[in-house]
Length: 477
Image 1 (tube, one colour):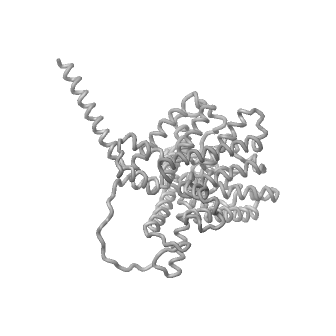
Image 2: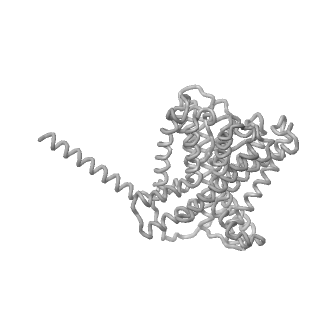
């Protein structure tokens, strides 16, 4: 009888716990559900990638955790040699994680939320759609299907070109096909993972590889809204005014940053002492600087060896600035976004013109967007600073001597910016960090991919609009 009462009590406790869990699950907001789902995907992916079927004995749970986080956040930082330490199955798993992270972890989890939480009312569907737009994913329903179809076509076409004209030195057809497909997946999703130990350094003189990878990076980085706008208005592109203001800002910002970045890197590295491009031919110099300007903002591929010994301080600082700006909203890259920069510049110009509102291309910009742009920029900058400070605590936190103490401030700042902006460029720091330093990068990659505003929304939960108006007072600037 006592055994029966104990069983009933245990069943009651289990039912109560499940009920509380179900209640908690249904109360999660979109940002909170996204964070929880992202952590679950990383956890499951870590266990799978660390299994003997996916990796060698040198890849433990920690190495798998870092690699999976880097893949889900489409960063590209790695502490293992993907081409050597992962099996074919492991590389396929890694490519799948890149697709999940690149094509919209937030979009996927928002759809899952509709099924798991069982909310099908109009209000909740509008909330999910608004969250997708607010946090830069770009649409629901049929639009998301179009995103997947467009991505598949672009990556397939890129793989075909690389197979036929790019990686021609790979004799085995299957290996060449997989190498082409993997690099196209990584490029379109702005991940920066490669199957070669030197990334793409050995292909710096190959125009087909440079061109295809660079084009995929740009297309993936500008976002679905822009590509859809260009496609639907393809017969009216003679006048740029036919495009939306968002599309025009993204295209102008993207190509201007690519040009300025290429010219800047060409200038800084050409005149640097023993510069990394100083001994290359003019054609190779142009290829390298243009490719690095494209990949620095979003992707993380490199066609030259990156380190403080091979690059000038001015070049590293320029790359840090490009990484901070990043890709465009709805794209597969990170950073504060090109439109954020455009709004801040527009606000500066309006201030100089003594305007009371921000006007860009004869269009008024809502004050809420300006506040959001300022908030994203300030919060992101502060987060990177905190990461850099924490990275300096590596040897102290670990209790052991570490290579961390040998890194310069510029190397630490470069690495933290690369992690937070989900770029993936490395100057030889990541693999030499101790566990504390790598943990800082893991957190930075996760926060950077989700977005600082989404993370804050997940922490604070639902907030109602403020309806109280306070007295106005002057503050001198």
